[in-house]
Amino acid sequence: MKTLPHEVGQKPQEGNGRDAQSHRNAVCKMISGRARNQLMNRLLALISTVAAGLLLAFAAAAQNPRPQNPSAPTPTPDPNQTEVVNVRRVRLPITVTDKKGGFVSGLTQNDFVVLEDKVPQKIDSFTDDENNNLPLYVAVLMDTSPSTAAKLKFEQESAMNFIQTIVRPRRDRVLFATFDHEINLRQDFTDRLELLDRAVYAVKKTGEQTALWDAIWQFCDQKMRSVPGRRVLVVITDGADTYSRADINDAIDIAQRTETTIFAISTKAGLLSTVVGVEAGTVKGKADKDLDRISDETGGAAFFTGDMLSLERGLNRIQKEIRSQYLITYRPTNDKYDGSYRKVEVKLTNGQSLKLRTKKGYKAVADAVRTGE
Image 1 (cartoon, rainbow, N blue to C red):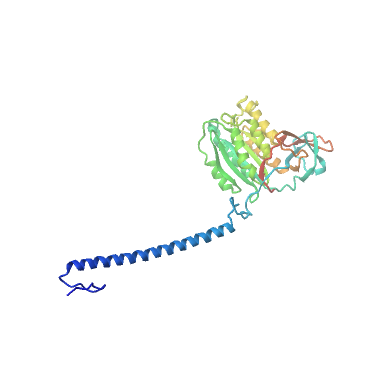
Image 2: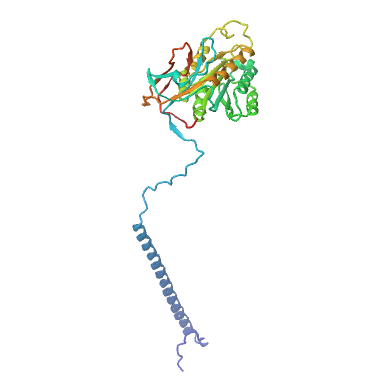
């Protein structure tokens, strides 16, 4: 009997091995072909879907092109952020004394004339000695060079006595720093006397050189320009600069531009003022004349002390002078900030034989300081 081909799923008859193997091969080929067809159909469907998505994306991008240089979002202003503006006015703390050196009070705006390069200026604001309630920011810089080793305690007492004399709690602020071959901020602006006292008496050793002009330049530039109110820098030192990159002219320039008044207290004589000569402070040397000059150019004064009594008198004098000053502001008629030096002069209208002291001038540079009084 002739054997018929088996249908799929039927078991081949035993004894016919060759026909059974052929049948298996045919079945496998048929199954593989169907699987390939199903896989190809799925791949084609997937490719069609992806292509359609890409076409839609390209079409949307063409209708809404992205800007080449998107601008950054505008930041929300911080109400506590310091505003920086270009200075377009000049502020003059003015000291008026009589023939005996006494401070003169009771003057009014009409008693003053301000000249810049000999051109009269219109006074914008005037504050007399009784109503001068602006906060006071004082930077006290103490010399810790090698020559101060024997009188470090003397300088510390000088610094702390002055700080206690000048600070009005909850209104004024004092900064304390030292300088030698390094410049160190010991205590930032504060009205807390205990912090200042701790910082002053924490100084235990001296350095190697004297960077006086660098110290003045650094604190005027980094600290004084950014504070509101009146700005005073007090230097307690015993000798000449030996280490600064800046010179006295740089120090005067930055003090004038940041409206900082400099007072100098020389402790060169220490407690040995009975010895006559330059080293005893009885004769002024170049370093003393430099202190006189930088104080005079910025509207302050220099004091040369040899003992605690003269030191106390000097400190008291500085405190009284600061509290007795008049304050005038004006906008220069020459508003070109071209870097030229502008000479400032203040006179009295009634011709009284009184002595006026303020800064001698300033360099016309568009500088940046904190706004507000």
